[in-house]
Image (cartoon, rainbow, N blue to C red; front, side, top):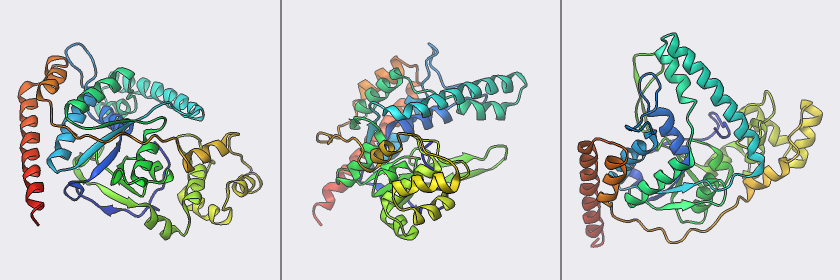
Length: 345
């Protein structure tokens, strides 16, 4: 979920074409959860193979990356490592929420309420270790580099952008900004037409970029204060202070500019308190665990491996896989020719 910055972040329209030729560090877990939540049947049942194994993550990775590669984008997927101890509270709360959603999904199915069923089903998505392994194998077969973070993938991706290894980080969460990513691109994994729930109409979802420095200047704060705002609103690591939204948080951190002052403010003025490990959470955002990745190698698509994973092992339709692979190959040749032409000018 991440921190909610509402309308305070300055967003600019972006397109996949404009990202062409750029390395984009994608928060893998965030993206996989998007696929697992959205790629479902009408009643909310996950997409599965003939053995009953969920395949929405594989479907999303293939078709989304095919579109990225067709536009010349150079994706790098950054996977989570060991979660910090203070994330356990959030993980436990999420597990409880999933159980509640599963009960509501089942009830909606029994009462024949398909739209409600699909809505509740989306909140039940789980990413298993087996899915993570499968995802990495498919990405490698597509020639897409995989980076293993020591802790939070979103933090690793943010530092990769700060280090100049990647052009931008891609995630739906605004936490990338708290981790200091100079450029965040949202909606990369959900670009396209999306149906509005309970309405017979669609909206076009397009990528949007958020430049950290621009947003900080517009709010007249620094990154440390942005992290303080996150702690007030709530992040993946703490619940936040009840009743505090983005606008109120901004007003508070302009008065209480350090964590020490903020803790005092929350106690005295809001009659509340942060968890005991709030200092540790703050420092995790300011200087997150990071490992400099080895040289990123973008390989060619291993057609045989992709077929084996998707068609042989998971019962994907061979015709659709072949068609998608042909598009990727054609785009690869076109982009390669364009790069060679560019070298002359």
